[in-house]
Structure formats: structure tokens, C-alpha cells
Length: 318
Image (cartoon, rainbow, N blue to C red; front, side, top):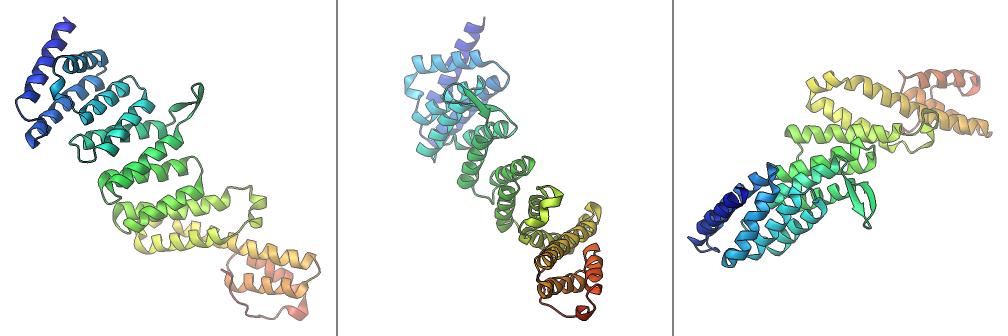
């Protein structure tokens, strides 16, 4: 029964294609209809039915087969069997060798699906027997999609967002920040621009906070300053959203961390016998971040040195 059904389907599809010139616009439309119907079979799990149709088409009607269609068919059959690495290679060859093919849109859709699957944690076989998470492969495919279609297209935007979110989910905050920044260059307003700006702020702060708390002051604080700048801009542009996520409290936290960083530098100078340098930092903390706990501590340390407790203005290192 299945053999008869697939045989009839192959004849119908072949007749559809042969009624027009294969390389004409009308021929492309007919091929796209064939592709849509066979994609439904594959998405519905009827891989063997799709395989039988393609086999009969190739055997009985070789004139309708062309290189881009052949590559797409191979990719579809691999895709249906969840052999995504081989499917991706066929799709990529189609896009590279036949950039004007009418099948490019359908191929990009499939590549996007494969990339999402890898980003979700699907493993990829390396060296024939080692199975590793396919995050890198998913990112590679998404980046190629964005390069091909452009970041100003819906698919290019979604591909770039998927990469940024994946980096952030895996706590690769520096990589995530760079991707959010890249997105912000193309989208500085609207929903995408808002998400990118918040992503930049969030990842810079998360990168600084990643080490244990007692060691954070040992690291470069420039990321904190960047996070503060991004959060401040977010508050200015999106005040309602800023209130909902508690940006004011986040900014207070960042100020506390910036102040504590400078306080610890001052304490280092004091412990190594350089009281004048230490006092410069204490004054800076007290003057630049007066509402912080670090400022209160700095004032106490200055009070212990009455000769240097005057309100000296120092260059800000915020």
C-alpha cells in the first residue's frame, strides 16, 4: 500500500515539475511546492515515504533533478534521520554553491532549526566516537546565517539573539557582552535594542561578580563602570522597565562595589607603609561615593589620622 502511494506521489511530483521549464521562475515555484510537500512528510516522521519518493524521482525522471534540488533532498533525508551534522553540510553546500537558488529560504530555515537544536545541548560526534555538546557548532551555524541574511532581517536578528542568550546562559559573560554589543550597533532602539542594552549591562556586572566575593576587588573594575553606564542609560530610556527590574538597587550595588574596590587599594597602601597614598584613596571614596558603606569605613580610617582628615578633593576614578 505504501509502495503504491509513494509511487503515485513520485509520478505526481514529476508531472508537476515536467510541465514547466525547471530553471524558469514557474519551475522554481513548482519545485518549492514539491519541497513543501516532502518537508511535511519528513516533519511528520514519514522518512521512508519521503525517501521512496526521492528515489523514484531520481531513477525515473532524472531530467528534473538539478544540483541544488539534489543537495536539498540529501539534506532533508539526513535531517529526517536526525543526522544533523551531515544535513548541515548538504545545506551549507547548497547555500554556498547555489546562492540564487529558490531553495535557499527553505534551506536557511532548516539550518536555523539545526542550530537551535545544538544550542539546546544536543551532542555532536567528534573524531567518529567522542560525543560533545554541540554549542560551538550551533553558534557557528547561527553566525553564518546572520552573515548571510544580515542583522537587519528577522532571521539574522533571531540568530544573533540566540547566540547572545546562549553565551549568557552558559555564563560566558565576556562573549555574551560582545554579542549584545554587536546587536546594539544595528538595533539601538525598539524591543531588540532594549534587550541588547540590558544584556550588555547584565553581562558586564555578571562577569565582575563571577569570582568569589572575597576576591572580586582584586579584579579590574572597568567592567563595573561599563555596567553602570549601561544600566544608567537603560533607566533613562526605559524608566518603567527599569523600575520593574530594580535598576536603582542594582546601581547602588555597583556604586558600593566601585567604592569598595578603591577602599581596598587604599588599605593596601596603608598596610605597605604608604599612608599618604592610602589617604588619597580614602578621600576619593568618601567624596565620590558618600552614601556607601565603603565611604563610612574610609571616613573612620581618615579620622584615625587627624593630621590628614581634612576634606581633600582628589581626581575621581569612577
